[in-house]
Image 1 (tube, rainbow, N blue to C red):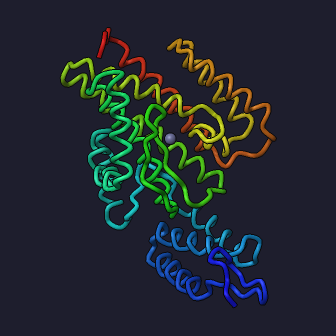
Image 2 (image 1 turned 90 degrees about the vertical axis):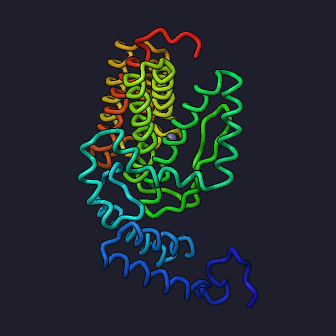
Image 3 (image 1 turned 30 degrees about the vertical axis):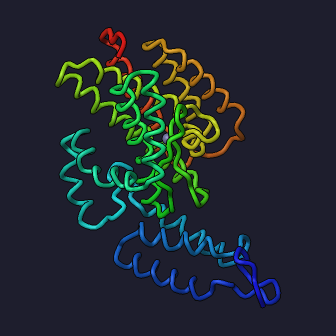
Length: 323
Ligand SMILES: [Zn+2]
């Protein structure tokens, strides 16, 4: 019988079309799990899931396996190493040296996106747009900060075994990472969503560090505006990072986030924080009540609000003038 390439089971006999590929993927996944490489095991199971008809028994069984493995993965975005292995231990030693150390260590993983022609091309387009508006130094700094933010998502996605595209810049709007598979687990969704602002905060901190070291006001401007862009991404709406974090939060946690945003506004008086706080409260009351998927998403979200606001204010401490 000739089957359409998108068909996952033969409509005549219900036999799985990709039975051989599925068996091979299951083998790969088991071997990876045996060596303790949970990321590789997750990637193989997710690939297998894509080959199965939704609603079938196998789909159900493998989806459950993925949830279980995802829970077993140590929940620490910053120690995420897609290649895993010995690198993780080495990173444990390096973590003490702070933000700059992190960027240096993640340099290879972060640079990975630049090997993609489409990323580079869209990056240059975005650079051109920002350049005409603000001059090349500022434009380059902002494009690099956005890039680091996006690679935070890519690193977290790959760690959970998802196939993720390299970032694509949308000139004037930021950038996106296209996802070929759906994230259904709220805890994973929050972790992947918040990985962007975590890396973005590190990029802002590095820029502020360069400002202190060199006294060049351009670095203060890049750090401050970079922090603001990351705060904007924490707006709890549909596809923004904040919206993904809210998937894992209870009503109380959303209200607590709103309180933290209100406190940040009292200090910073930035109009965007009013919008952010109002949306937190609106989501708390309009979302159907549901238990939190742990406390991590909420405290990471609140810590990000506080530290990004602090970074934004720190960079505003000088009169930047026209960068
Ligand atoms: Zn993001």
